[in-house]
Image 1 (cartoon, rainbow, N blue to C red):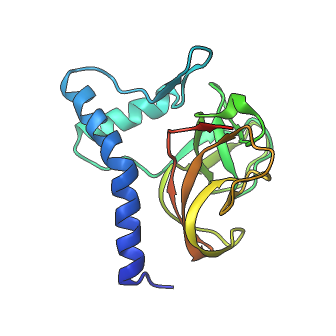
Image 2 (cartoon, rainbow, N blue to C red):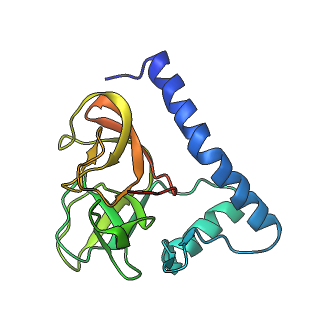
Length: 184
């Protein structure tokens, strides 16, 4: 299914809303000679969400003027199916749950391949993703759902809400992990 002009306009708008502030901060940090580490700090939690190897790859890509890869490899800390939202625990990627507040702000992407515990897994960190295991009734904002899949609705019983992307309808989405978290 080809993208229509309306689809492209919606994607561009969502990218600008989410990415522009993050890119400005990245540019500021790089030009000041500092290393940029996305973190969440709220008094109890201070977590670097990108492991050093990934960080080194990002720095190298930026320094060479290239694009940062949208799919990055990690080690799965448990069995993970394609299409599920994951967070980084400091060592591995694990399934994210909207009912576990310790996952808030640690979400890094959506599994682009399946893996079992200890295997290498491809994680889509941003960009357009198409997967036969995903199905969205309509375009709209995607949140972390109760089964770790992206969902068009905020799940009941959630202890936090985090946007993970934008549905383009069908089995296509724009992965855009919003670092902002709403605690319920």
